[in-house]
Structure formats: structure tokens, C-alpha cells
Length: 244
Ligand code: IPE
Ligand code: IPE
Ligand code: MG
Image (cartoon, rainbow, N blue to C red; front, side):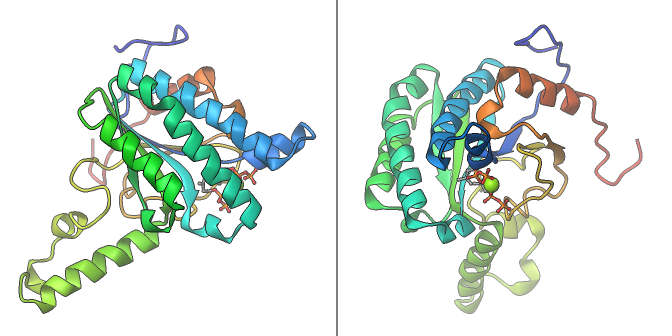
């Protein structure tokens, strides 16, 4: 049994929890506020959930913060999100260090504005020696783009004669993904706000992941909701295609 936050015993905790943080805009609209207010409240949920996962000794947490497809949103929302992310990274840096949390990022990071990228790099550097938990932000991230990127790198090596097509196994292929070699596949995925879809998140890595969908929007997703999800995970029977 591991520690609990709300009196609920947990027999199993995920080794790698992934979250699609959805519903900031709808949450704000339900309060008669603009979408940005939703993103700000969502940042507060990020802080609460990161701290809770650390306390629960979850070794890896990956948050889908901005998808490749999110670049198609209005410029004003993108700019506000990027500014919010930059502020969040600077503000949380000391806290991450204190809690021994290492920050990393996956995605097409070259597309991020340079000020946001700098904040990301500096926070990643400042927490590089932390080993209590790995917090990965998926930014400018798309699963199909990640797989395509891996294919491009791999095929260049095939052309250069460094690897033979017959030697490509799932394990070899995986080593070209953004998550390799430091992140195991997620064993639990939470999506907030009612949509029952993956939206291009970790397509390869989710092959045998346990999925959990809740109607709670991300800004309202706090410790109690996390515990409820983790209790669901603890009750899952994972078979990986085999018999018990
Ligand atoms: C999630 O909330 C945050 C991002 C995708 C950046 P949304 O902005 O998607 O909020 P909804 O889904 O429109 O309510
Ligand atoms: C998924 O949410 C991406 C993130 C949470 C960053 P979206 O709001 O972009 O997904 P769709 O458009 O509802 O599929
Ligand atoms: Mg959404």
C-alpha cells in the first residue's frame, strides 16, 4: 500500500501517469469568463497535481500542454498560452528543485517562441540533477509527427548503411521516439473534460495504457479527482493480451 491523500488506500500506483489537460476554455465559459482565465486556473491545477503526484511517489508524470494542432488556434490565444507557460516555468523552478522534480519536454520544441524555449531550457537545466520524479511537458507535440520524425531519422541511418531494414524491431524503432530512453510507456492516461479521444497524444506509447475519462474540466481537477482516478487504476486488471 502506498501513501494516500484522501484516506483512500492505493495498492498500485502508475509508474508513468499521462494527462490530457482538457477543458480550460469550457470551464471559463461556464463561469462567464474568457478562455485565458481558464488557462490560468489550469496552471494552478498543474501545480496541485504535480505536487500530489510527487507526494504519492509516482516516478513519471507527462502533461499534454500544447498539441501540434493547437498551433491552428487564434494567434492571441497562442501568444497568451506561451506567455503563461514562460511565467509558470520561471515561477515554479525553485519549487520543482525543492521537491526534487526534474523537468523535461517533448515535441517540436523548435517551433516555440524563443522566450518560452529559453524558460524551458533554463528550468530543465536547473532541475537536471533532480531524481524524485520526472515531469515531462508535451509541447508543440503530436504523436504522428513524433513517429514521422523517428522514421526520418531512422531511414537516414538505413541509407547511410548504419542499420539494416531487417534489424528494425519495435524496440529499435522506439529508441528513436522523443520519450526514449528515459520514459517508460505510460501505464495510466487521464483525460479531463468529457471528450473520449486521444487527440494525437503518445500514439505509439499508449499501446497498452489504461485509459480514464472524466467530465471534470482541467481547472477543477484537483487532488480528490486525482485520487478517484488512481483508485480506478488500482482496480484494473492488466493482461497485455495474455491469460491471467
Ligand atoms: C486545454 O483546454 C488546454 C489546451 C489545449 C492548450 P482547451 O483550451 O482545449 O479548453 P476547451 O477544450 O476548449 O474547453
Ligand atoms: C488536446 O486538447 C490537447 C491538449 C490538451 C494540449 P484539444 O482541446 O486540443 O483537443 P481536441 O481538439 O478537443 O481534440
Ligand atoms: Mg480542448
